[in-house]
Length: 98
Image (cartoon, rainbow, N blue to C red; front, top):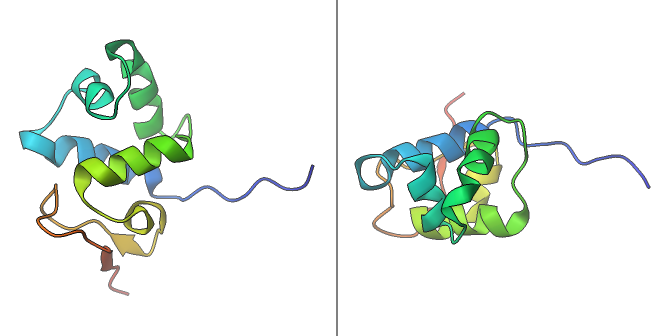
């Protein structure tokens, strides 16, 4: 089949940051519901945040919508998320300072 594509190194970190900043911090169950999943999917959120399981594209898009940032800001390692989430205006992310 070919080689697997590389996983974004900071994806899990960013997903945890999004959950912890939304509405003063959401539980994993609340985040699952916010993403359109069931409350039984709390364990999936945990696995995404611990980099055990990579979320499918539709879940990354859901994170993008609830945080009001473009998908690129979540998946590109060289971009940081904005300090305030959800972002007041749709954010493209902030370049990482070298």
